[in-house]
Image (cartoon, rainbow, N blue to C red; front, side, top):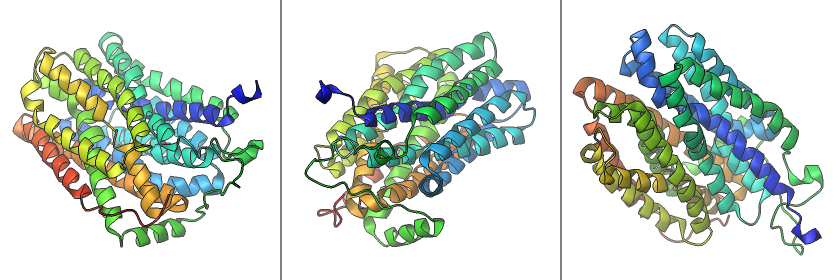
Length: 417
């Protein structure tokens, strides 16, 4: 019966997953809040898009330093504080009256909180607690964004239509606040803290813990070394395209874009939540495939198909959900952030396990900078052109460029992960 006991790593993984959901919940629902805010306060699409862009930039640029803070002050303390910041930022949103407050609450407070509980956080947990099943666990953590979207987006859209956007924002704040004591009580930083070894550690082999990064100077030192290599620029560039085509474009603008085509907001929110369902499946499947197939092959496949799918968006959006649109939703959901597990794996392979969390932190920063540029670019295109068509086509071309750039990663990685 002892062999059937669940390893403590899975409890840590579960509480990490729910913390990631709390961090993702507010960010996944911002597109549903665009039009209610614009109608109530008279703000433009450029102003609301700016708040999302600031959120994405702060979110992304916080991630590399969050890894350093987590090494120095413990993951448990930093992630708990981050959850409190998400709760505070989303909780203050109903009190705002000026657009600069939107930037402060969404952009800075929620951005800092989500940045500290981004996928870099998940990468650290996977590296410390798992030797076997790292790809699968990384995929599960990646799917947390989809789960937050799936659970909260339809709820927020429904609340906006029935009780107003303020109640919707408070629901997210409450969930994040509840997660603060839950996370603090159940999470532990390392297996050694509870006297065990990571999941999958061979009994005949001593466990070698990943080296700790204890200073921001070290983080920049790792970055400087990485920027001299082709793999870093390929991974950073392609992940920027991933951010552009997910969080920045679809995540921020799908609901208002669908509304432009005559679709009710709650229907569009339901479709975006459906993306979350298939994202959950696709990202976990991608984690499973990453343990078995060359990550470079997976990325070429993912980016190519994503680019082809984006070309179809201007032609399939309409007032009702027709089969071509639903096919796009299913496909795009499966491919949404399937790129994460193979990208994390390539960071490990090219730069080694000891530096992989820091490298991925910087690669992830490029992901969110790409998303931020896309959010503002798409908002500006919509305001000046009256439609999102140019934004869709631009994103499609960028995906195809990303797929081709993966071909620059020739030969086997120099550093084993």
